[in-house]
Image (cartoon, rainbow, N blue to C red):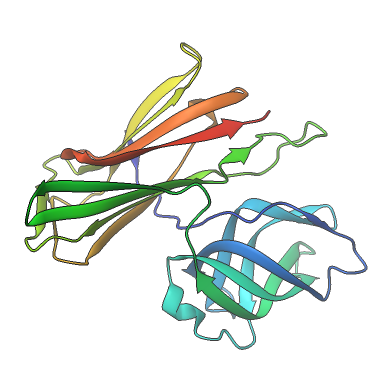
Length: 246
């Protein structure tokens, strides 16, 4: 079993910017808005498929300038357009910021929606996506790509009565990743949330969780199937397919 990482992040397609243009270039990226843990910026975008800038992989973009209400999208998957500004910190390491971004929420590519109706008054929608849904653990040169594929799971209550569940051992999310090709890989684990013994979702309330897919769960090239569900209620779950290229 694994403890929940609770890192909310998502994809930006990897691309390179030459040194001459990287300092001041308008870009559009997709990611999850997060509160910054440190530094002068209060917000940032975490990118599971990193940008490659001046040969350096960048997985975090600080938000600078006018955020245009980006804090309203905290912990949400967004598409953001702004000016990419690259510099170095006191240690000489490359740092990057997205200046004056404008963001809008959008669904991840390949998102799956599963409607659940247990009765006339018990209705819910489960969504699941993996970003990026096609990736390689190594780049074309054979070096680590830095990719961190993430499963984004959510459950929204659309019924008139609350969704109530108990988790006596704090095992809230159950995950299984297996290869489409029989016998290649089949890995299961649970996400522990210490202190969470019960959940109760009223109408329109959302429960969501982000789960990182470790390399050992999908170690070789091929197609895989991932399932995420609430451990106390497998009916609240969904499946999504993804591909490892190398």
